[in-house]
Image (cartoon, rainbow, N blue to C red; front, side, top):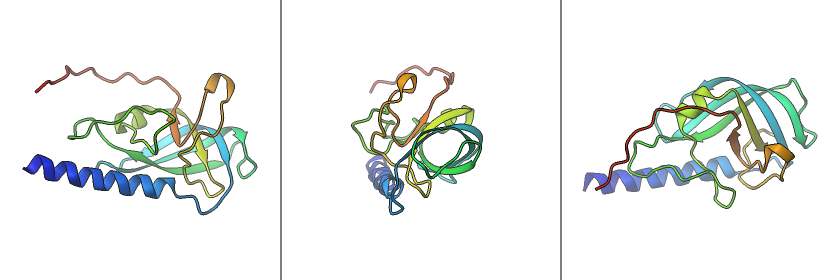
Length: 151
C-alpha cells in the first residue's frame, strides 16, 4: 500500500515538474552549448536541480552570447525510486536527469526560451551534437553499475 501511495505522489510531482519546466511564456528559441561550473541539488528528489555555467556556443537564437553566464532549472531524480527514469529521447516531454550525472557534468546542451526556461521540444539537429531539446549532458559520465533486481 505504501509503495502505491509513494508511486502516486512521485507521478504527481513529476507531472508538476514537467509542466513547470516546459512552460515558456518568454518566447524565443535558443539552443546553447554550456560549460557547466556548478550544480545545486534539489532539496528533495525528484525536483529541480540548479545548473550554472557559461555559454560556450550559441547554435541557434539571438538572446544569448558566448561567454555569458546562465542558470537553468533542470528536472532531476534518482533511479532508486519506484518509478525508474525514462530514457532521454526526443519524442517524450521533459525528462528527469540522474543527479549523479548532473553533478559530474562539465558540458551540456540546452534548448531554452529568451528567459532561459528549458524548452522540451527538439531545437533542431546540430551536426555532431545531434538533436538538442530541454537539457542534455554532453560529456560522458561513469556511474557505478548496480545489478538489476527482478521481483
